[in-house]
Length: 215
Image (cartoon, rainbow, N blue to C red; front, side, top):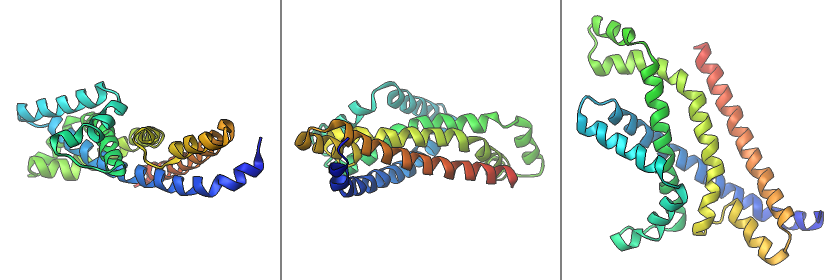
């Protein structure tokens, strides 16, 4: 174990961890937006929206995320989509995890007893009001833990953007391996930093889950 080398290169890994954290936050936000829209489409009364929602989930869950990134970053310019590596990483991973979040959100909503919606309608609420004030608050409690699983998977999945040259933890490890020939030390540093980010995220999600169950 070359501790001297670890001390020398760790500042670069801290910078890369910040990039990984930015990727994780932005991708999570985009994933939640896509997941919410996808769930709304899947639960729509209109068949065309249900079809589009199902097609979105099927495509992004049925093809490798790495292929989707390549298609967006390398294939995008052919159809007029010009993105830098970071932007492509955020959009590619965000839309991908959104497909998984779609099913998580939809499942939580469907799990609420239909009688709750009927009770809201009995009180004079519109379908949207019943969803907003009766169904969604209850569904939110059910979806926190599953969404947490999605987010943790997403953080680990950010390593894929190294393939399109985003300078995050995995890319930084690969770059230093090429110059130091010390793969164990480099991947150890990146692995520890991934673990710290995921652990902190997990604690935050557990806190939210406890708060939701108290309210």
